Length: 364
Image (cartoon, rainbow, N blue to C red; front, side, top):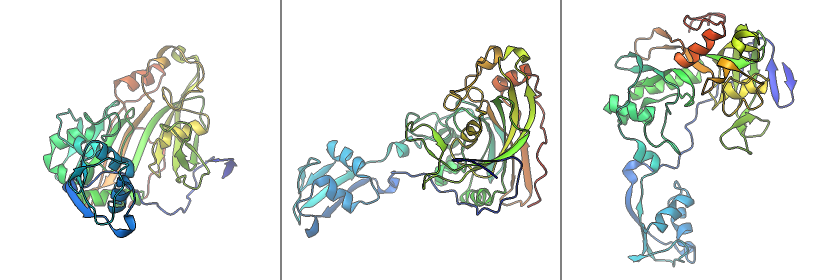
């Protein structure tokens, strides 16, 4: 392994024995929907003299103080049956009533008819070819029109499965294959497979420059303190281990189609599944994804067809996993959608057929 400061790049694949990390749920301040509604409590002696918002937070530790303050400002709290303000002081023995409000995320968990490009479906799982531009999960700025909303419309019973069965995600601007669990049993099994790295997830990427013929990038990632929308390679204590393997399939020289720069077609496989992992890792070795709005800011001068792509050139082309109940390996391949296919064909690449550049994975 060659150390590059905070970046770690391996020139060839090595079988590293690194403990598999569990895939934790993302932090959420959502209240259990069943808990939404009125609640009350009596102020304890040790809380006498405290501000109302601080007192409520002490009695509802699973809810953030900022969210409680918002509720109080909306008139959701009373002290001894009287309207109350956030900064009001309470006394021991006061009776506090507060109306718990559902989070925006909970309100967003509703069925919306959305066309889903389903590749495979049975009673346990669903595999789809997500189009670029479709957000997977409701969040800030995208509280409706997401894949989750479409899944709830397609299969109402998914409302009983956490996150409507979603076990992994793709960035909004990334297209390609995703698997969704249709039962809690299937979801637990697929999460276990992800933890054990037995789910094969292969991506095709078009990057700037002539990338190495193969390699493994091991570099921990954390959120960029200068831009909360970005992640970066980091040596901070809270940075999370991440590893990406890649193989170069082909190179298009600068003269091809007037693109203005040499471009490489890579196949990438994930050993971990961090947010923006492939995008950050490839940028960290000087080969950002073509068209990436966050990580290709220092890209070379491009021209012609290379300027036409309106999103990062990344597509999840291959997915392979063990069926939760049939206990047999299942695999799928889907070529890129038309925008990326047009670009790749103009560069002289053949994106319509699967390409095997990795050694076969051992049988599970």
